[in-house]
Image 1: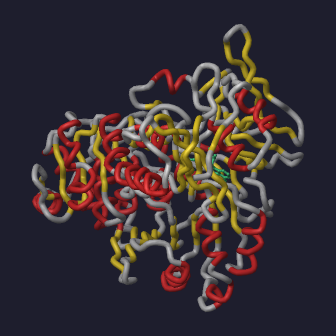
Image 2: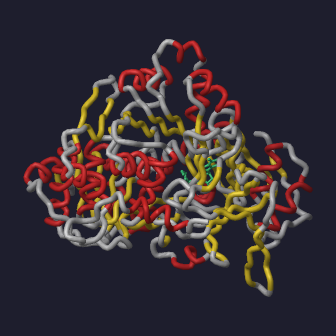
Image 3: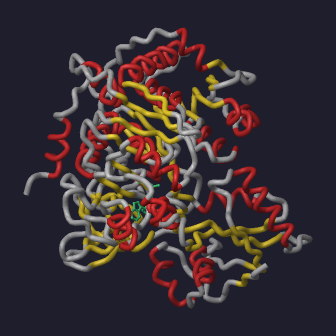
Length: 578
Ligand code: PRX
């Protein structure tokens, strides 16, 4: 069998590296390389604004403007490894800032614009951010009040109006030279941070390196079939990993024209964009597909969607009925792909050009070795048993040998180390592998929530609820939802002197929304007299979830054991419906 690393090595040969053999930099491969090869006049990005007006940026323009921004950052004293973050809607400046930061060898990240002040504060603080590029109104609403509590934050570059304590992004960019020779960049230098959540503790800042560009390139070529000439649309927001890996880096490295929709989801708008822009490759989420399905086939029939060559999805289970719907309505099936923030790129997929296995995520890419494992504790040490054979289920674990694998959780080496065991990376996903080697998704081994494709950590929501004077305890779960996959539901107990009521419920949801923003705030909230605990005092979210689903409690013992929690049989949940 061909060694797994050959797949990546071959892909790397298509990339140029920095001129003069000075290393590998994502921004060079994404933009400058195409300009050097004479493709500078090709459209790199086409922004479709809310009214449908298109503004295109060529590779040459993007190269110049990102160079200017690299000069701005160097002028501000940014050094390699410094964190430069953005908080902005899907504007050209966001993309220019990303590429400029990468050229300056800063570590870049995007904060999701729908986050509230608290998740933004936590992330800025955790990463020790030095420069923040922020839209003026988002800054005023979400950062200004906490700026004093983020001592590392030296410069705020404002997009739009100048806000107190900020510099003008536009003015600085306009005054900077638009030529920039990227300094030697080691392929294993940090380039990106993507935040992700676990069951417990604050969000994790997964660190990715410049070498990841090989993974973005190779997987986009194979699993999305991207090739020059394609008009490609990744519908994910850059505030999430898909929007950066496959909305920004991969399409540019592949030299295609990429659509950035500045509007919100609207089925008619989406079909119109596909028709008008002649989109050939669409990468989206099962939630979006379900919303298109709900809009009905008549709407789709009003548009010419024949430009679509490949449609792929990621982030949540793609059910077989969605694949059939797409065949009938879009004229092509949907290719499911599986990956995670940590893996940085697609690991498992139903590849274009091969038969789609409806209901399955597909097979590991040629460069990926995937195993089904069970965790076993021996003498206080964790071991993994690999489960061979067909139709076996267990946790998905991968041999970490691909270029876009994360290299650290920023400042949390122990948490990073816990993600590995016996030479394997533990994904936390439960899967079944069939006789043909295809993987099916069964669920999570932990209690993270997937809502509309976004990974949400219950701890972050519980912490926000606990900050309200009425709340004694809080447990948050994902409740199944027909369109979003899951929605967040909170169970709270109240402190003495507070009474459950509709008005208090609204108050608590409002309190959470103000702190967390609409993307993270709980959608539903129930009051409880008590919450179920393990013997060590942890709230058993699985029991709450089972209660929500109407499952007998006996069904929970196996999964609790897997978590290392000790269920306390003497303490049943006592949840009110108010
Ligand atoms: O549980 C899996 C689910 O999304 C998780 C990763 O989420 P995140 O790190 O936010 O990255 C999202 C974009 C890659 C996985 O652990 N997931 C991802 N792809 C699929 C999936 N669940 C089912 N089917 C998929 N194709």
